[in-house]
Amino acid sequence: MNDRATTLLEGRREKMERALGRPLAVPEPAGGADLSEPERDHLRDAATDLYLNELAWENITDEEEVEGEPLAELAFPGFLAFVQGLLLDRVMPDSLAPANPRPEIAEDVVRFLAERVVALQDGMGEPVRTVTSRGHGTSPSPIASSTSFCSVCTGWTRRMPRVSGTRRGRPDTGAGPNVCLRLNHTV
Image (cartoon, rainbow, N blue to C red; front, side, top):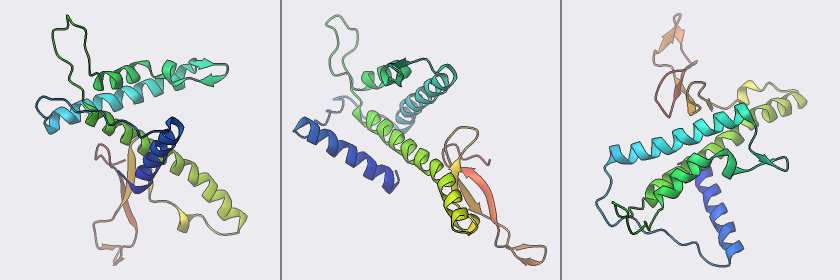
């Protein structure tokens, strides 16, 4: 997770603690075996995919509002239920399986959301940077960011340096392709 996302997350937690007047409780991890990396990746990917699918659906329908304001509980019901399931520490007495809370996965999801907020802030920064540059009579290109959104999976992309050393007989100082940092594909 990048520094800005970490700072954002720490600030939100401090604000919640001030509002509650007490430190936030840290959920206890499951008493069973630790998750393997593939299992952890699967749960984290399921949560992020569910979030992205519900976000896309909300963008299409734009119907989950109360008094003209979007309400997260209506816009993201499956995603929020999934996260609640990750934190479930008690089950009904007739349940066939014991509670198996996975707060580490919920923390991964919170980090993903913090990174999305930072990405959205950066995405809004480009128009501001362009207008400010033009207002001061400079070109926005030297100030442009090397990161953007992936048009395929909405992850981060980063402009990679060109691999070859020369182009048309001259040293190559140009940038290479955009590579998605989420799925590692070229866009």
